[in-house]
Image (cartoon, rainbow, N blue to C red; front, side, top):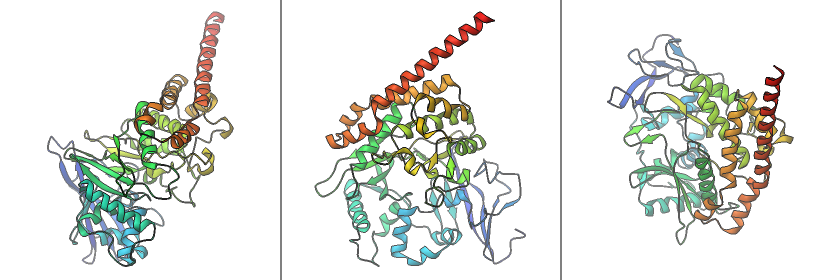
Amino acid sequence: MGSIQQETRFIAVDIFLGHNQGNPGYETAGYILLNNLVSGFVYSAHYDGPSLDPVHLIKGVQKSFKPPHHHTLHGVFRDTLPGHWGSKQLVEEYPGYAQMSDIERMFWLGSRTSKGLRFRCYKKPGVESPVRGIEILREIERKSIDFLMGRHNRGQPIYDEQTKWAVIEGGGSRPKAQFQLKGIDMMAKFNAPFDPYNMAKMEHVTLGISRSAGIETPRSWVLPASENGEDIFLIERFDRSKQLRHHTISLATLVGVDNANKTNMSSVDYLDIADAIRQASDHPEEDVEELYARMILVGICNITDNHLRNLEIILNKDGKYRLSPNFDLVPDPWNSPFDTHLCNYTRADQHNFMTGAFVVQTAEKLGISFDRAKTIATRVAQAAIDSEPLMDKANLNEKDKALFKKIIDPDRLKSMVHELEAMQSMNVSNQENDIRLG
């Protein structure tokens, strides 16, 4: 990138280090540079923390880093830009935002914080803090749904300055807002009038199954509907704990493909995710097993929106990169598992989907032993089979409960578990025969 000239603009990038010698806080990691429309990133000479991206921005490998082909900004920084929902709000108020490149958006947004990263430049920061108070959250819900349904007055601000950034910073395409209640940082997701079922309750139940299966999963709640509103889904933020902030990186960035669009659908496989985790995680084999458990859960609950932005690694309080807790688990009662298949299941035979053969085949490709695969798959399947109390506790109505049971198909799961038990018995018998022959 050459020497930094006078016309070069830069954004300082600070990372929150929770393990920083007992004194957690932000430390300057490096600088995003823009010079004559050419952008890049350099680490600070004084920074001795972890790489901001342990796959593509490996500290010490080179002096400066140019963004990948056809991009103006590295993926780890693109991860911090407002997602589809937040961008729609910005474009409504600032139409020029739609025409900006990613690096232009980064400079336009100016000084701000996003998860475990803080950006500092010449521009005054926006007000980026969660909203507090259920009444305020309900007002944001009303305005968000009005905007979603086209009932908003075009060209007028949607939210006041105090609440705007709580909405804009949320990722994904669903209406949502950052929220804090009783000192707990959460993300609030709003049901939409056209939803085919109660999304808040269904996602809450799926997260409960994930938790029961031993998969690391954040706490979640459902805020009951008000007189004129819908239920609101609340999920605890895992990128914050007490006074700490945790840096996260999407698997879209680590794999190098964003498959949350029609162009790249089906272009990524769980094998690609496992490869990226093995490069990025400080405990790769444990995290690949965790990934396998989540893949089985995704198949059982037919979560067809399984794109790479719904998987992240996180820099934990010990300064280690690990697979982040599970999130964004919305079951799909209508599409077959291979209708969207944003992530392919280790290129496995779809005709054997969610059978004992499928469990073994996918595990072998991921380097997981039969015994571990059987234990993991049985645990996840049993959590789904035993999920009716979770549905009752969430007050799912009879229609939605029937939909959920149709999705998980307990009889199919019981057959899968029995098939795995038969395989294990056969393996034991074969081993005993080998011993006798020996």
